[in-house]
Length: 540
Image (cartoon, rainbow, N blue to C red; front, side):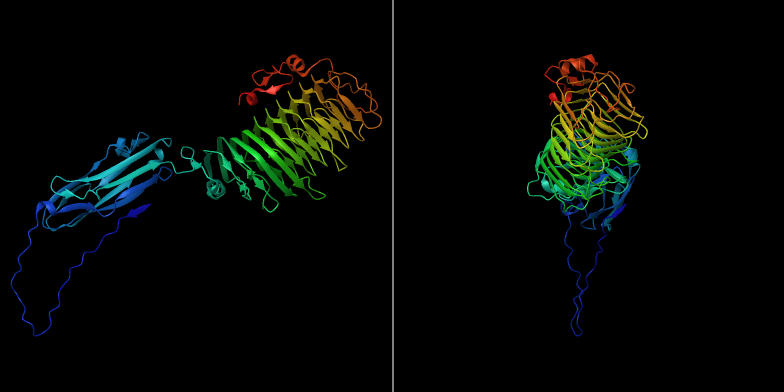
């Protein structure tokens, strides 16, 4: 970048004498110019913001002498960085060159040029702020005190990791999506609560090339409203690639038609670009209408509709969201796939859909759920292509593996097809593991699938072990509910009518004793109450 201070051309004016006039050739008396009324000054002064993202800048500084009669010397003095505040460090001399900084004005000189070149700025510590103040000084002449200083502030460009965008108003939050940049990850921080009442929110659309790291600072966004008029997937974000953390969404309203819908995002992460959600709490409602074939674009979830990618995760998040949908829906996410992970999350809302439903995840396609719990209603009814229901997950497919571990549910679960206190339906005969889980549901109901179970419904010869069920659980699996027997692992050989299900053990009188017997990590779980709670929630 080059910046040039404009050169002013000095013009000499000549008087025109008309013919016939007598010219007065007497030399006029020359007005005396004294030392005190000759001054030096800068043509341009002020403050300049430079960014460490750019390796170099170049300036040409013009210094003017008000009269040409006097010879003089001048130079630039560096201003003490303390004058600009403790957050600034003085820019080391190795990072700039001041060519012509020591000036000598001859008697007929009125202008002097000084070249200032900043270089190698990208090698500075980007976590620091630097300053260079240059003050014009002279022992020979007076210096105009209003035109004697140029100050250069150097830091990482706003939106970088050490200089994030700071959001304090509704308008700043609304404009956040406009700050996304191709090929860059921007950083933004919320510094106070925001009420979006009356704003028809347009989802922020990140991408693999336009990512964001958004820190809510523990603040709350109230009354988020996203309607079917929005162009992309529905949520605060349409697609979130990057990270969102430390924020609360209170009383959100999301409505959609044949789109992925969640309060935080329609989709979090992509196949090769992860999305991470940590310490996010949401509450409100989601209403999703879909057409007759919406497996790939009709999901709903309290945090997001779809969690996608091996490095994508939702961690330590909570949803108190009531969801009505047509296709798959879950308390945390409608669908998790391609190796995604949900951990230490809770859902306490009611979820009603016509397809598969899970208290945490509606549909798992190669994913992991661990250390989570659900409470409320998980209902999938009436008949769709596949509408199983589970207290943690409804429909599970490995491709190559899927795991549910150390989870708890006391949701009321009901569906047209297979139900389970933890999982509804395993869609493949191998590759799925359900372990160290507690199904303390009061009621499980299936309208027409005897292949349902206290822990897992149709399990397809998969691996279940070390799970406990509520001994008082009411189970109705079609008009011919099979006999339910205790089993530490599924005894497929002994199962006849209603085979391929997993019932677990009913030998514990309460879920706390069950969690202790299973060795649940008490730095993650609080086991002091009547039911297990996540320790991070109680610490808030």
